[in-house]
Image (cartoon, rainbow, N blue to C red):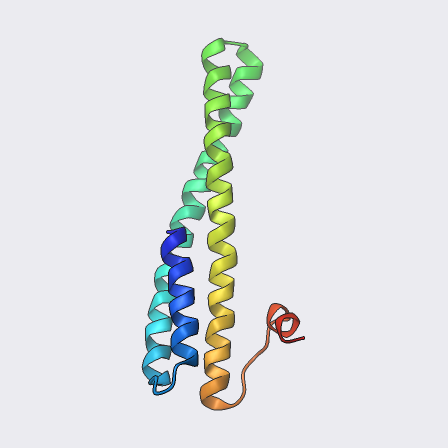
Amino acid sequence: MKKYLTEYRLYFKKMLEAEGTDLHKLMEYHKSQIAFFQHERLVHLIVTVLFAVCTIIALVVSFMTKELVFILLSVALLCLLIPYVSHYYFLENQTQALYDDYNELFEKINGLAYRSHSQTKQKE
């Protein structure tokens, strides 16, 4: 997913700057891509939260019972939780960047659009 999202943003930037691009079609396509990435982000949020809940439960049980099985389970879940949080963080930030891309396209078509804080920092 990271590769796909990164490549899509590069493709979008290239199409935005290319001469002869139908910007209205690009906007519709971009809206559908945003919807796909929002869905992906929601799924990863649910999985990440469930993993975090399972990790906390396993940690509590391992502290209460001091059984090796639960300690190992807690460590394993913690080791898996870290990449899940990292991946969700990436998806969240890139989805926000897609909104900025959409605003940039909207501004190019209509002459006005909301500028987020990150967009105003980039222009300086």
